[in-house]
Length: 182
Length: 108
Image 1 (tube, rainbow over the protein chains, first blue to last red):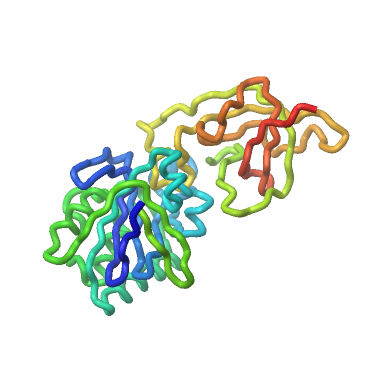
Image 2 (image 1 turned 60 degrees about the vertical axis):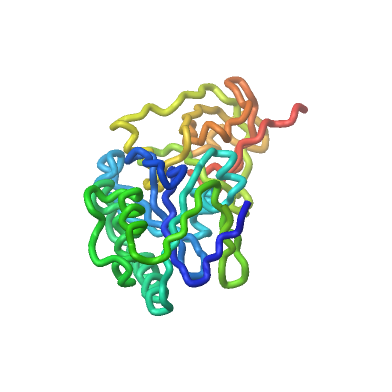
């Protein structure tokens, strides 16, 4: 297990993506992000009644580490990830202090007003993309269908440092920040 | 889920509000409606390999027969462990609609 150096980076985590070269099915992937202090954060769909069963007309909710610990422990605990066989691929993006602050602020805003969720066009990757756009890291939305893997490809093509790590991912609170391991 | 199923959450350091002893009557894999969209990992209620378990409280002087809000639980298959139909199990509950642990009841 290796510790991921987070300082100077923010990140995208594609759940269900086994490696850089792996392209999971559309319903086998999910996007979370890594804030500049290493904290995990992500957007999920909840409620919606009968339309919720097809992923449409749902409410959005943003989960942080505490939320993932009770709803997705295998996204924040490497031992649980191994137990459940949940592989993730982290893509880090080198950012300036200004970009990092804007990225974190975008997630703070989404957390207080998550809005709606649709599995097509307004999903986890759409909101992750919005944070990268708000930070000035990306100039436009995800090319093609909004999926975590397409966002990954868009970020990987950036002309800036984008180190990649794949495996069972863990986040451990360390004071005001988090230690990320793979 | 939108019905009154008792849904699964991981404890995350939380202690249960109550523990209810039940007998497992039925274990059924959840059907994959709409090509499994309803269990996409981006949906809050998604859990890995969901199974539905029908249970009945074990009668005792400590717990009334209507102690559960529903007779159906929805949990990840992995958390079922070796628990089978007919087993007696202690359910750790948070409020009326969340189960955070299933433990085989000790024989006594």
